[in-house]
Structure formats: structure tokens, C-alpha cells
Length: 348
Image (cartoon, rainbow, N blue to C red; front, side):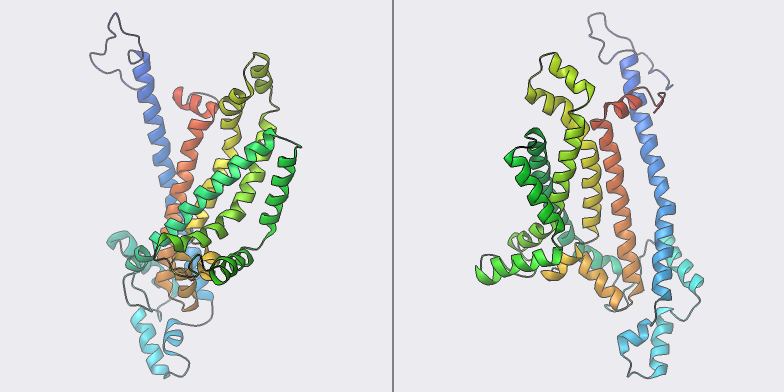
């Protein structure tokens, strides 16, 4: 238990909302939530170390070296060896790996790109806003379409609307992303000329990539929301609410929706984190300068610092997104909220 605040008394005419145990419970809830967040942040350290080691090992085991890729196969062997020595690529694997980790930990330096000779963080910060914009727009569009149609489909089960939504969701879920992007490109850019076909100079350039990413993910959200809502409306507490005379709208929006959204929020968090990794297909089809194209180009050129820096940057963001999703559970699930209100003393 946390110590009681000195001089804390409840006035005689006070309602008690912030007096005595209530104030103490608020402090306890903040304390345990902060403790949980710090614990999750500490768990990120071994995760990032594992990601760094795996990516570094894969890049080292693949054939080829940066000197040969940058200078070409026609370059002199001594020039290739000199460039590899400049990059430190002639050193043993573990020496290079721990030197890279030392630069990150002690100097906060993600390295210098082999190809551009610029700091890796500069290239990441130049490309990341485009990927973040695409991820946010895609998540907003897919959640609005998928969740709203999923709720309507569950409420109107076995109706014409339900069958249409299920069929459309199956079609878009089965549709390859690159094919959908090409069809949208041909229709709206080449045939109609309404939207630009490449680049990221304005908001209009994000419309087609956003549709390419969001339509397929909205189909999955629709099916998940529908299944979760149908499972939730069959619970006993929903029948009890209806028996007490609650209207259908109140039952759906007040009682069923919060519990039904728990798996949907998980899917949204994972999808948003994956989108931050760069919707590689959409960025490739529409030639968008984002994180996806940055990483694929760096992999082809075996630009180890660029691949490592971009991977670790996205791994940190993905871990933070999952942490935010876990915190949102406390607002959606009353059982998790009660756990924090009881100071973590419950059975979990």
C-alpha cells in the first residue's frame, strides 16, 4: 500500500470522490500502471538485442560483400578489399556486431550508410514521414470500413446486407495486394487521370496506396468484428440486459461493443505496427519514397548499417504500439480495469 498523503482529511460536506480511500486508490492505480509500463519497456531490451543479432547474422551469412556490390564485379580486387576495410567488413563477425552495438549504446549512432555515405538516421527521418502518413491513413480507413460494416453485419445476421458484406470481405481478403494496386493504378491514373500514379508530394499521392493497403485489411477487420460481435451478443450478460428492458441500441453500444472490440484492437495494433514497417507492395507499385523501399534497396546493396538501423527503428516503434494496445485493454475490458483498481491484488 502506498503511504497516505499527510493532512488528507475529507470535509464534512464532501462527496468522498477524492477523499480517503478513493484518492489512495487513484494513486495505487497510477503506481501499478507505471510499474507495468516500465516492466514492458525493460522487456524491449532483450527483444531488440535478439532482432539485432538475427538481422546482423542473416546479412553476414548471405553471399557478397559491400565492396563488390558498390564497385561492381569489374573493379580491382585491391580496391574492393580497401573499401571493405574502410567499412570494417574485413573484421570477424562478433567484432563487427559488438562494435555496432557499442556505437548505439554509447554514442547513440546507428551508423553511416555504405551507399549514400550519410548518417542512417538522416535517411530514416527523411523517409519515415511518408510511411507514417500511409500507415495512419490506412488504419483510419480500414478501421472505419471494417468495424462499422462488421457491426452492421453482425446485427443484421443472415440478411442481404450480411451476405453482401461477407462476400465482399472474402473477395478483398483473397485479392493480392500488388494486383489490386495495379488495377487501381490503371483505372484511376491511366484511364481516368484523376490521381497521380507515383510519388508522395501531396495528399492526392496517398489516396491510391491507402486504398491498396486499407481495402485488404478492412476485409479482415470486417470478418473479425462480425465474428466477435456474434460471439459477444450470445453471452449471458447480454441476455440479462435485454431482459431488464434495455434497448437494442444500448445493448450493442454500451455492453457488447467494448468486449467485442478487444480482439479487433489487437488486430489493429498489429496491423498498424506492420504498416510502419513499410507497406512494401504499395510503396513499390506506386514508387513511394518510404521505409519499405528504403529497406529493400539497402538489402539489395547489402547496406548493413541502413538495414540494421531501419530494422531496429521499426522494432522499437512496433513494441511501443503493442504496449499502447495493452494499455487500451484496461479501458475496454472491465476485468483488467478492476485489476488495476484493486492495486493488482486480484487473481488476474
